[in-house]
Amino acid sequence: MRWTALAKGLATYVPGLYRPERGATGGTNDARYCYSVWLRHLTMLRAGDLPTDPEVVAELGPGDSLGLGLAALLSGASQYYALDVVRYAASRRNVEMLDELVTLFAARASIPGPDEFPEAKPYLDRYEFPHDILTEERLEHALAPRRIDAIRGALLDRGSSENTIRIRYFAPWHDADLIEEGSVGLIYSQAALEHVDDLDATYEALRRWLAPNGVMSHQIDFRSHGTADEWNGHWTYSDLLWGIVRGRRAYLLNRAPYSAHLDALRRHGFRLARSVRVEAVSEISRSRLARRFQELSDEDLRTSGAYVQAVRA
Image 1 (cartoon, one colour):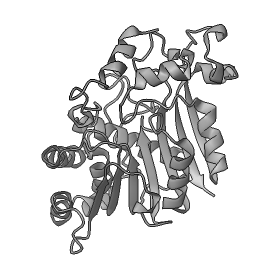
Image 2 (image 1 turned 135 degrees about the vertical axis):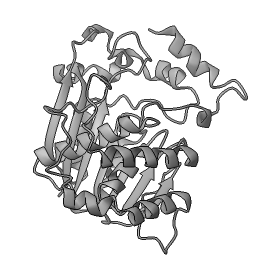
Image 3 (image 1 turned 60 degrees about the vertical axis):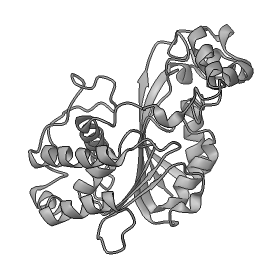
Image 4 (image 1 turned 90 degrees about the horizontal axis):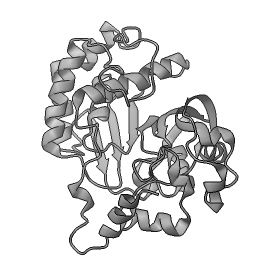
């Protein structure tokens, strides 16, 4: 047990001490990280013979900036929905992020790999710029000066009906009606689905938003996120103890294992197109598992992460 995790949870009950908006999620405040993650998702979609040119995209859990969504817009998308639990993404940083991303795309920079972002997944076989996806013709249109100005205008004046680019940022989001049913071509997330409290409600909302044959691309991290000494030690905490670890936080971990996500996908009308698991040696014995996790499979106990592609059936 990591006692500091209990202390941090208890500290959230101290009046005035816990303010979620003061924190940061890490990662998406770096333009190169956002560029790397977005191009990894595109590359994996192409490898799975899935569409790589969505007109409308939605992101679950953008975090510190809207950088991944801006990268999608600079790749040709015209509408971007960002959905988060806490409003982290600051407008000033987003404008700076846009300029930095334009520079990376204009240079056709290689995808920053494990040497720069060792924790970023999914891993790729190659990290060259994906010219086969982002062709010169496509980028000539996507990076046209007037279009970049339109993206900047949408960023500074969200919801303007006169702009050809649309950016909508919902934080917190709790209502599936925020996005028109069947209107989104691609929904993606990066280390976000392990944090949602209601897995079934989330997957049902994602299904509702996606157009028929629309695609999802998710990287999910099943590790304990510092709440335990072992990477999978969060599965040893009873529900009572875990409630203390979480405290009053707006979110922490849902502790759902790999198989729970696959089951939820199928229950809510998705076809699993591809899954790439990341394995780690289990650092806990079965005797230490909390009651609700006693039936975890050996595969679940070894799965520290997974990249999942799914199609709305």
